[in-house]
Length: 270
Image 1: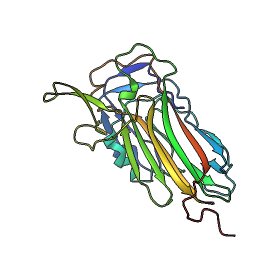
Image 2: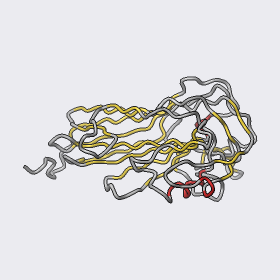
Image 3: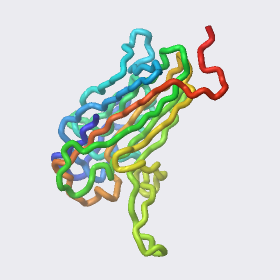
Image 4: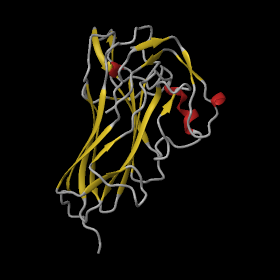
């Protein structure tokens, strides 16, 4: 789980990446607000097999441990990040590589964005179906100026072609007043500022996204990456005090079962 606890707020500051071989000079960007958090609890990934033989792993190397539970390493608390800065980080390496890491501020006291890559592998001899969900909980929710989920952004990579890097970005829906309807309606939030693309909406207050995979064949591998950050250009945080004591926690749940027969061959060739 990723604990996005908030303890204090600073004025606008430079955000400097320390990733790969990118120099500090070429990645400095300005964030509208900076919010520091306490040490983050890591992201959890949990797999439940029911008649299936899937496994989780952090690497495609042959000696990588296969398990049903993964725990990402700790990172410092979060500072708000300008999502338009991602091109700087993507020039040197793909964000969804197992070799890349979460990016911290220059002083290493807070996290600009958290990222975690893992793989789902079918280690059995029958095809499987599985569902994946990213869920939110509130372990330490107190009265605050705004809900941290309102400014949370999630980049979700899901690629069976390990040379591909396709993703979607998710944000909690925003409410605005529709003059024609004379009421507030729910709409899509921008990824980072009004000039950026619209993000996919969270499915609910508790579920960010879900994905359904069918006929996942023996020896097939799916690479997943989650990139999480608090968007400094979100209107919900602009000019507001940091929500002291508020927090979020996120966990990935995967449920797998034997593939439903469709008339296609689902077992591996011997």
